[in-house]
Length: 76
Image 1 (cartoon, one colour):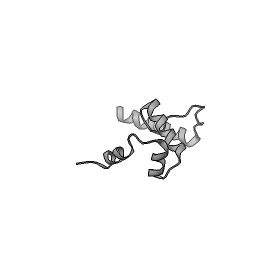
Image 2: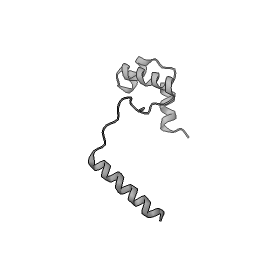
Image 3: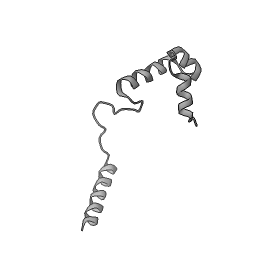
Image 4: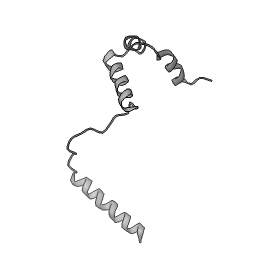
């Protein structure tokens, strides 16, 4: 029995970027980007971005403290 992903792979394997683009009705640049990402990383999942992390809000700090208190109570 063939799954949907197997069926799609059979239709797209050994096709050019332009052919895949026409079959899926998506831009060639998107197809090219996904193929490049797969070849470099072995995945198409979104990767963490570089840069400085966002500042934690006051609420986030309060929630962190509450979690620490709950953790301490559970360990007693």
